[in-house]
Image (cartoon, rainbow, N blue to C red; front, side, top):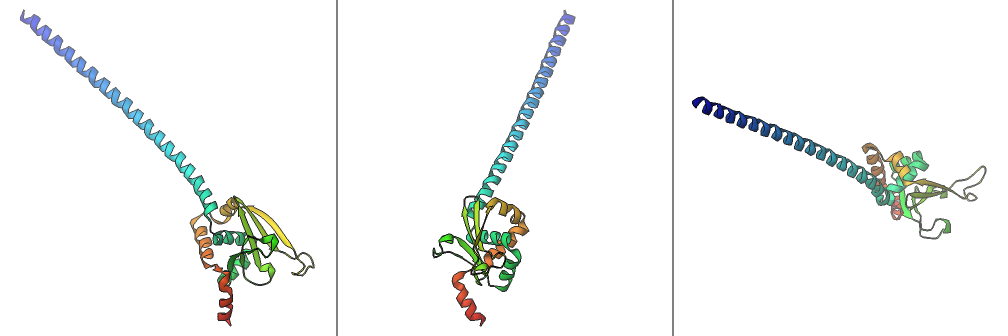
Length: 195
């Protein structure tokens, strides 16, 4: 009888141990399952963050296109058209910007950068979405400046940005030039101070 009780107790104890092990295994499986679902959830979040970053990046580039100041866009256009002339004008302190008041039909409403010399020293530009129209008097062959007509080009803002405004040193350079452009209304006083 005692042997029978010991045997029942041993079997009960074994059953409890087995149940405990089973619970432990199912707990560890549940934890493992939870852990892997958390892991995949984190992966999805990071994928989601990556997608958001890509969307933000492309919207930032769009924002850059639409939020460029006339001085910044003028700087990009001038670097595209004639970088040496532009940098020389900036370094001499005689590079200006403005908006054509409408006296010239072909360029009414266009912004411009200029060194205020003859008509060839004006680069006119007008943004329409991503497109930028550039106009400049360019004498051909044996034409005089007075005989020359506007040469018209088109380029995209995104192309200008990818050529001149990608890394931080380019951005600093462009923004530095843009900050040095003076409103054309200041030209007369600059000339008076120069003399």
